[in-house]
Amino acid sequence: MKIREIKCAGLRGATPEGGWSNELRPEDCVHTLVAVHTDEGLVGLGSVFSNDQLVRAALAVLEPLYRGENALEPERVSEKLHQNTFWLGRGGSITHAISGIDIALWDLLGQAAGQPVGRLLGGRYRERVKPYASVLMQQPEPLADHLRAIKAKGFRAFKIGWGPFGRHNAKLDQAIVRAAREAVGPDSLVMVDAGGSDAFWSQGYKWALRTAEMLADHDVTWFEEPLRPDAMNDYIELRRRAPVPIAGGEVLTRRQSFQPWLQAGAFDIVQPDLTKVGGISEERRIAWMAQENGVRFIPHGWNTAVGLAADLQLASAFPDTDLVEYLTGSQFIDEIALGGWHLDGEGMLPIPVLPGLGLKVNPDALARFTGGARLID
Image (tube, rainbow, N blue to C red; front, side, top):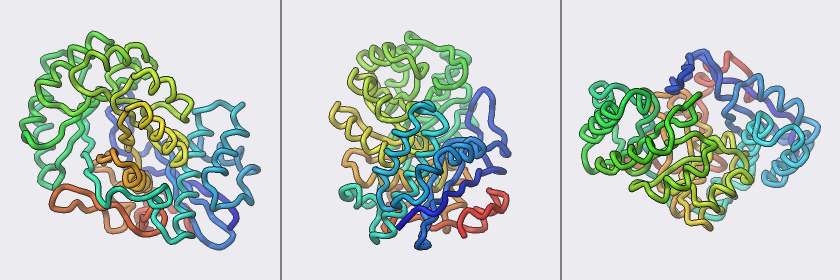
């Protein structure tokens, strides 16, 4: 089975707010879907955390390398793309585009084998996983109302992040976290994401340590991105002294970037994003590296229905990956998946058992968000 062509289409019209200082608009494109078409008619889907113009340009550069390649060898083909474009800059638009191609190739391999991707990754440790609702922070009262509404839908784990947190004063930070804990109750998980990768993040190590001590008082499960994404020495020291687990890594790409962080003990929880990092092939290697260094692997998942489907397959294949991120309120997640996603009575999300990623796409939603692009024939 050979790769015949690769198409891409950006998602627009319902881009959710990111909490960024330069806030996203609904018409902005930060997520792009790719479709790998084969000479035997099978199509695999992938997702890229990048603007479609950048993805389209990257595909043009990569085309001589992937056209005619074996569509059933995702890891080898993806590594070929990485190795032959190293000089263009590891970690940028080329790497992001390869991420989507790799996800789509795994989807194709699963379809051809008649197996879910998780089984092809070595086996399924679980058939369902707990999703945590990923929610932007607000002022305490509206945030509490929002969290109660999400809990009523069945969620039992919540991550609150970005927004005003760390951007005003410690009193407001504590009020936000207290309101969140009271809203979801003592039996739910609460995680806090400072959003230290935002432009010109101003908080440093001492703020992060004081804040971690406050979060421990509210039984917070982990403290995510409390520092600028390149402050490795501060992360190492914070992990040693903070009374709550420290999480990060969503902005890093490829396994080579993660290696020094994991070996130095910078994280309790590492969060690679497979739509940036190099796809399923690369994320699996990072997860293995995390295991070897005593670090928990929980994927970053602020992306699309395709990205969520891939995260679910990865979660099935790693024994300690018992949580996945679920971006609540995103039409790119809820509507692109045909029939949507449904939690069971214990707040767990079933992991698809259909071949490949196990995702059935809603063609009407796909057409609406891509401007009618013919991504899938």
